[in-house]
Image (cartoon, rainbow, N blue to C red; front, side, top):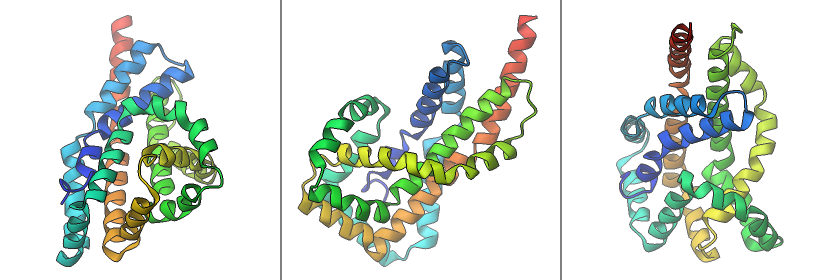
Length: 247
């Protein structure tokens, strides 16, 4: 199932995606030396295992979908259109593609104004749960950043307090993330024509497609959020060791 879809290839990039996101955030904040940011990025990367995330997705699919639904999903991903779209999604999700995505955002936004591609976005966003999933990922990255910063300070801020504070910011994040998701949509599907996009949306809105999307999204979000507290504990031990060495 997963090998037919782009999910396994995208999931394989999640450890690097989370690591790169937190590393970039720390470097941009300027609150830690670049070497420390890289070390934290390494700790984050080593805390995620793509095979464990895949196992969770497979278990979720087996528990939530009928054999008929799974067959319908598999049939879709065997089509030429699905293969073309899957390759576009895999390429765009790689951290190496992020600079190109950012540099082309203004150009793609301008060229898409008033077009059917722009109009299709709301339908795509609802069907794929893209903004919702991206907000969850953003909160996970921010939680990792905040946990890392707390580990390096004398503040006795607990993981649950940090998470509650970030959850309170969810409505604000949804507004900020919405534009980023739209930029990603324009970049990812720039070579997918409207007929192909409509076929994709028909699949995402089908009973099998929507269940598949929900289970995959929920499984990924749980997988990338659950290690965050442990990452904070590892960083606290790392910082304590470093402080001991410097004395």
